[in-house]
Amino acid sequence: MTDQATDDTAKRRDVVLAIDVGAVEFSAGLVTARGELIDRSFADIEHDVGPQSHFAALASAVLAQREQAKQHEVRIRAIGVGCPGEIDRNAVAVSPAHISAWRSFPLAQHLHELTDLPVYGDLDAKALALAEGWLGAARGARSFATLVVSSSISGGLMIDGELLEGRSGNAGHIGHLIVEPGGRRCRCGARGCLEAEASGTAIEAITGRRLDEPSWDIMRRTGGLVGRAAGMTCSALDLDLVVVGGTVPESFAATFFNAAQEEIDAVARVGHGAAARITPTKLGDRGPLIGAGALGWRGLRRALKARQRSGADQTPPSGEAPTVDAAE
Ligand SMILES: [Zn+2]
Image (cartoon, rainbow, N blue to C red):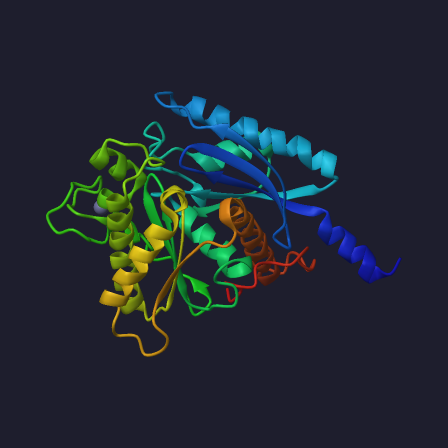
């Protein structure tokens, strides 16, 4: 066996244990350096339980994947976490809107204590931006936005190949653009935010119906509002591509996307190139975990660079990292 072959074998055997804090369930999976999701486990997010009970549910999925890693004969190098906002950098503290028991919950520390692995986390929509830019609907695009429209709404902004961070790491909260002035009160305190009008939580409150029993009118309205916010984002940032995932577009499908595209066409008029386009995620329900895996690989790469800068470690990186956001 050649050195190259040995090296390739070693690459295949390294994985990131990816975690997604989803709308209705926690998921955990194993993601290779090439972005393959080779296994996954789920745990329901219960209502009305305390912070430690939520973590116990998540831990069950994480530990199941650690067992699966043995079956697959892979080595877990790090944990990557995608979580709805707000979060502190690297998921040191998380306050996802739909898990009220988690307010500044020290997620990274809990995961580290559970697994003894380095933990790299970020907003779910930023994770999705990494995944869709790496292997999905935005593959090859250097500038685009992603939106996750679920029980809350978050966004990720990839600009010139760099995932925007902002002052607190929460850049991309497109869910708090005002789409209905004077509209419903948002949890942020403002009225008429996209999240207060078009999130799954908002739709159920407005209609009194479950997400999977929508009327045509609510699918059109929701798509239009998402398109409005997406169009404003495209105008502000000179973008021509918005990739949308989450439980709402998955449920509302083409009716949602057609209405969203019509609204973008109506409001995003300043583009100098191709007209802005809104499109579903390509990676589907694998995207959040592949994105969380990308966060883990990115974190490992950054840690390695930091060590190399300090001269402490000259070991080359194991595995390929996401091609997008490779500039740092
Ligand atoms: Zn708001």
